Length: 450
Image (cartoon, rainbow, N blue to C red):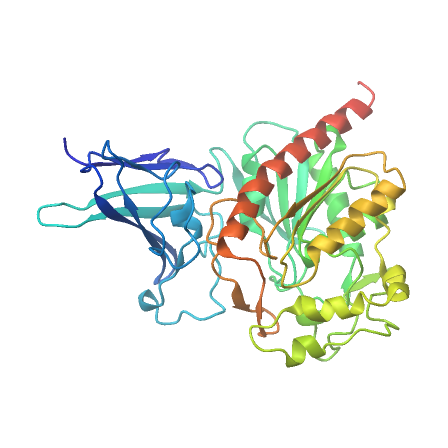
């Protein structure tokens, strides 16, 4: 019986786990499995680990852990997609690879990703085996178009079919830009999804400083008017500063927001920080509402200091500075986002080892406040033990814990470990999809029949 490599399914959405197995090996035979994914011009991401076949000559990654010490990036337990999340950039494959090149998606960010798997066998006459699988961000029939209307800068992804569909607006964090991968994946699960830029995108400012929140008021009006979402349902999904932002918008524009999903969000208003306009400084305002800056946690703060961030050893933990600001309860109270004003379900995703800011603590603040006021809608806090700031969706590399901030260039760590971050990615995404499905159903049940 000859050895065979099995990969199923060969092509599917990125959030679908694959079964990778090898059969027909010699009982007890040791082999190396290696993965390679090209994620940019001349830049490949790679992983490898070593396994021992069972008595039937089989290795199954859904069942078998790699041998201890055979992989240097934390892949040492059973994980069906460990050969993806443990990938690291192959610096030899791209001459320009730097800390800034940590994007795990293709330069065409909704494009499929093809991963090559190779089984390397020892001994003479043992031929290598090879296969591929494709991870898609956009499912069959999903359409994409750029939005440049009413001063908005974004990309709209629509599911197949006539609709109307419930809608999700996706906002990035302090790196700015337009989060097309997440929007494409939301659309692949049935949501009209607008990835909306608000800085560091074509025609928009380069920094977060003095972001006018009326811009998002315009965006929500455009979504309601143009897409006419099913049941009038429009959720906000934001990451990091975008998570802070969606909580804010839910309080300021409650009639336009049906549900809020905050990935590693802040529970207080923060100044511009690392994404600031250097002319205005990191303690300058990030958000303006009706022409006035919102009160942030650094204002009048008796304990806040940037010293742990400025003077700490690299890679620095930005959270260390943020924690000093949270030691002044009066400043925290002034800057707290009044989440009780949100008129819909709220989901917060966080990690207990967040290196950027204390998202786990912030998540508890949100959930506890909503519990105190008897929030009449669903509240969910998905807090992931040992995970850091970079919680996205399943089956992407999680090894780039140290990075240069895309605006400030400062070298820092987002926290967590590759394995813990991979577990958070895998566990949180089904929770997000279930939260959305439940929120849409609750919205439909609350609306009078036509």
